[in-house]
Image (cartoon, rainbow, N blue to C red; front, side, top):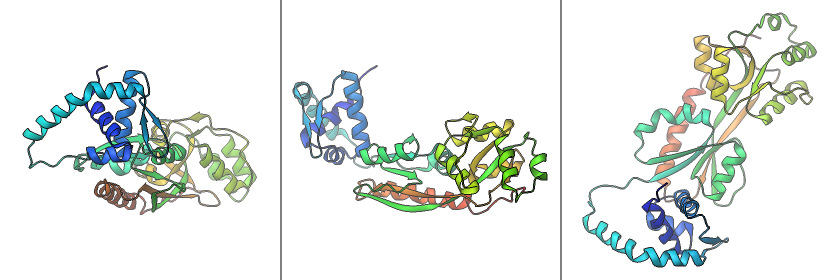
Amino acid sequence: MRADLEWFRTFKAIFDTGTMSDAAKELNISQPGVSLHLSSLENYIGHPLFERNTRKMIPNERARKLYRQICYSLTKLEEVENSVRKRSGKERMTLCLGVYSGLFSQLIAPHIADLDFNLIVQFGDNDKLSELLESGSVDIIITSIETPIHNISYQVLGTSEFIVAAGKETDISQFQQLDIENKGQVRKWLQSQLWYSNEKNIWARFWKLNFKKESDFAPNYVMPDKNTILRCLEKGVGLALMPHSICRDSIERGDIICLWKGYVEMKNTLYIGHRKNSILSDEIQQIKEIMTTEFEKCHNESCQPLR
């Protein structure tokens, strides 16, 4: 593995300014980009270079030695760059986004080619995404939980409706014949099926909401994300709790079945969270507009369940 020159530029900027945020301003990149460069350099060297506290990045002895070794060379290189740089071109900024993989495929992926900035994407659940935003590893997230974090702003993206989706090969004939008001029969039939899941909290919430008790069985297949579950349902047998928006096209094609919405419809409110007063405010606004527009398109219809 070869070292990247940008790692050393970032290291020098942190050393000179004393903070990650000031280094980001000096380099005209995002704070998550600074963090990524520094961690890459530290991994390459095999040792930490700074002691981190709430206010400053304090260089250790290895950092001071490295700084003496590279400072003159980097300064001269910057002078050469400044003398030959074309003034007419605008530098591309880099935005770091944290999102559920299913929503990324649905809302953002179709517009990647139209963006006028670079994009680094990280997937995760609510806890991981909040941690990434709080630590400065990403600039903006989509989440279903408003975590109170200093200097973070949240706006509602929209509401997502959950359904019980069935694979097209699933035998649902018995379910169609059930007395739907008999919760015991419905619960027993649901428990007898093969289930896919990727979120324990959603599973527990649906069961408690509809049957007023904790679930006493576990999913058969635990998948990494909802897109994977969707592919499995399209090809086979089983049930899953899924956002209708992700399933909509598959339902229209007849690849999966909108089986049931529950006695009480379950919905999730999604939020966009991002840093206030970011140097990437234009890029954040652009990605927010894309996500909001696409979300409204995907969630403007509801499916009609079999029961």
